[in-house]
Image (cartoon, rainbow, N blue to C red; front, top):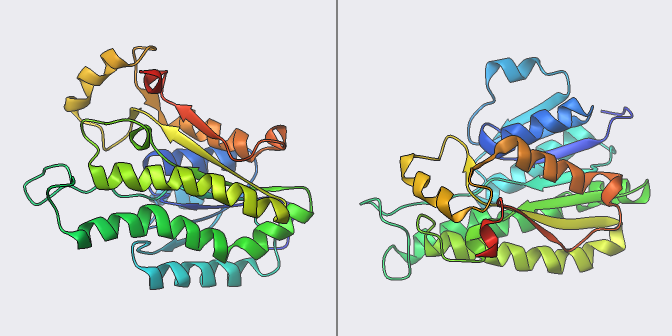
Length: 250
């Protein structure tokens, strides 16, 4: 993997925001290393920049370690210019209720925090040497995908998901300070209502709460992530960018 292209490591790549982000970085000539529970679509395997994909369950700490080990082995001494922590889970109870404060087991809550909070931390630690190499050579970036639900009550996001994303926002700020010494910037992107495979008809009434009167697209989130990883944003760290059409203002 010793070539001049910058390298992106991204989690949750098989669909939605993650898949759109891969396509944006690939269009810009980046080399792509990804993981998700599923394999990537067949047509995407023909992308010459999509160098490595590892199917893995990031909700399992041992699997996270395996992903880091396999990716680092493949990368060798190559720097990692960007890490995007996109994979997350927003579960419902057995009767399809929000996983809230008065329902669901603590084991279910722990599983949400494992994937949504501890996995991004573990990946940042695991790829820190490769990120630091890029930092010394001109800069590197971590982008954590948070959520509007981490800042306000959301009708479809349960308490476990919302509080895990609020914690990830706080972690982003702490990481920005600690990773700065490595030359690595750390920011977050908080999407609002984004048209992906997870959106159903029940989301339509929420459009009235969005000043721009439409849902966002995965490509718009991907573009924001890309800009945060570019040198145009080389003096930006510890920020959280809301991609919500203004919904977070209410």
